[in-house]
Length: 120
Image (cartoon, rainbow, N blue to C red):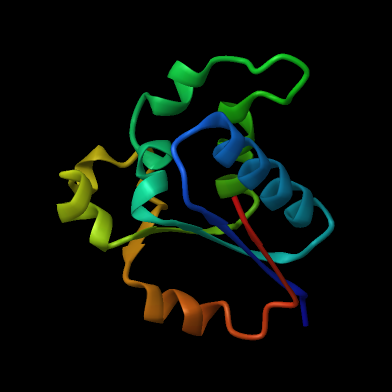
C-alpha cells in the first residue's frame, strides 16, 4: 500500500502555489499517493492561463511544468466546490479536465489515512 500525502493550497500568491507543486510532485516521484485540495482562496491556480502569469520564479522549477507533472503522475487534484459560486468560476474554466470539483467531505474520505499533510 502506498503512503498517502495531502497538500492544501489556500492562497493566491506564489508563496502558496510553489510549495504546493514542489511537495506534491516530490511525493509523487517517491511513489506517494498524493491528494491536492485547492480551497476557494487558491482557485486561480487551477484556472486556464493563471500559472502562465506567474512566469518563471527565480531559482525555482517551472510552475506550469510542475502542475502538468503533478497531473501526469497521478495526483488527485481537487478544487473545492464552494469556489464555483464564491469565485464565479465554471468547470469550463479549469486548466485541465482531470481536476475534480467536489466538496471537502468526499476529499477527506479519499485522503483518509494520509500520513502527512501540508498547507500552503
